[in-house]
Image: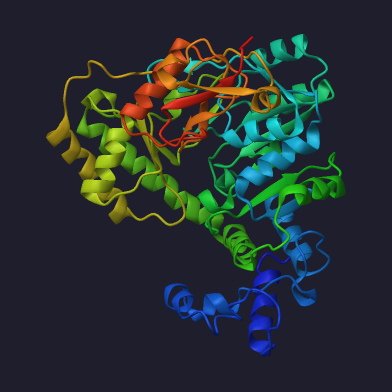
Length: 483
């Protein structure tokens, strides 16, 4: 398959919809015939193509026809040797990468500011994390990218590591020197795994950072639903020529559902066609919107909107200009406070708010009208709510103190302590603010004073803290007896 105008899965679904096939299979709503509530909410056309796997529609666990063809078109569009359609989100793709590369006791070199899905994969496979020195920007309180020299130090200390894992871009738009990282890993016989959840547009836009496949990475997890326009929870796992695709498929099938949603699969198919045919123009417009927003927000005063001026050739090798990250501390408000005000009082939903920043995600569906509304709302928030900056916590990134592997700590005998009294204990669970989903604490890490302060501050400011057994995060499960 080389014709990017084609959508094999969507076309097959349309053929089945028109066929009048009498359903005695699942799903039980029988193409919407007896689900009036679903039909009113989603529309009958949506339900009419909500099929289960069958011979004419292929099977995601072992594609041989239309899904195989759609994946081949995606691989060509993204410059990969193979592409796998994922219906468990980029979380499933990230975990498949780690589970493919690492077994119990293997070492994985990675930055600490990874998504929680990586920690989950380490718990599942029993690999041990080797954290590259993660540097932070003190002005904005965010973790930066992976410096090549820091990677080389980690490899020198752990030459037996199996793979290097990189966030590219980070949630804030920071990109590492991916070409050189992949080259260094290759020289040492290690795979390069890239969490490219926020970089689907890199493959199609002009003037954007280099995508993982072009940089020589072995595997990349791509959230098509984030900047690529497919339905939420749909993603791609891309692999290069040095990875056995059948082995990857086996790993994917360990955790991916056997009842894949054809709505998600078709959305990947259709979104890929749109990007392959129109991506350059679409993301060109998105870059113009982001540039306009930066200029106008900068003129308001008080806010600090960072972009390519952060590029330094090491920890910030490049920058994704579609990530409109706005530091709010200059108006005396935490990012999460501005996030809540935008939603509750201006009917504007940004991607996330953390301790010091908000992120407005500019992508395929944005318009100048909505960008202007965001700019106006931020100006109004400054006028109405600005206050002295004193008392605001400024650093988002907390350096970890690793004592046990995530798997050892997660499955260890536990005891529960009040969160305020957890300092010095070893966490047996993850504590993170979502979004962005970067853990403050991982299983096996010491609860340091800084980590505890960050958790209590985030809780007080109204951040959504997840990962703990206790929904209120009043208590923390820790390793019994400590170490």
